[in-house]
Image 1 (tube, rainbow, N blue to C red):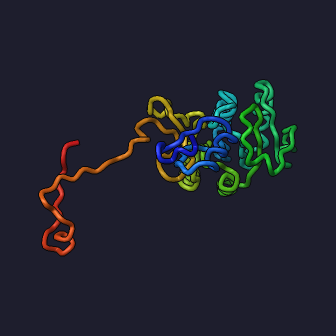
Image 2: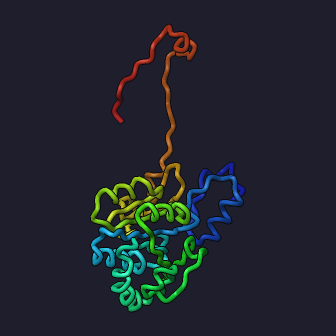
Image 3: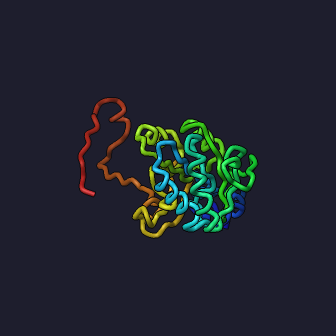
Length: 242
């Protein structure tokens, strides 16, 4: 199938990281897909921590094998200790294994994360935890290790939220809600036929309407481009009913 570039216009792979990368590397047909879903949740120092915990638990545990589940939890240094003190017992009850950086481990995280964990898609009840200085540090981390799928911030500071929403270049960027909303059905697209982390459209969850292409029909009466190029005639435009 990957060699049928004269017959197929588009391939939409649904499956593992290895499957998607294999298809992308072995065909000349355009591929709409994402190889990784490395999603992040950043808890700001102006967050409602109870709300942040609900969002973090849902984003990780509601369906951990989904590409829109979070793989890394970023915590502002000012609230990291307080948040983890409350969150660790809840994650333990739900069977979530936490892997932390050196600072988060001093706040009770058992497992140790290394540099490879920041870009890893676990698709399991495993969550990397990192303490960051501020929203800029969180944005830099996402830029370095994210897959441009879906990222979320929890904060009551509207200025910080807006900065995060504008600066993070992912197909979905959320404020005070779970990353698990990144889904074509939940967006109202009907059945989700694919999801794309590419920058060019379609981007993000894709329904059938997102795959529509266009053809252009012109009806003339001997019109030639030279007449218009020479300035003898001017273009005019008329809105027509769809």
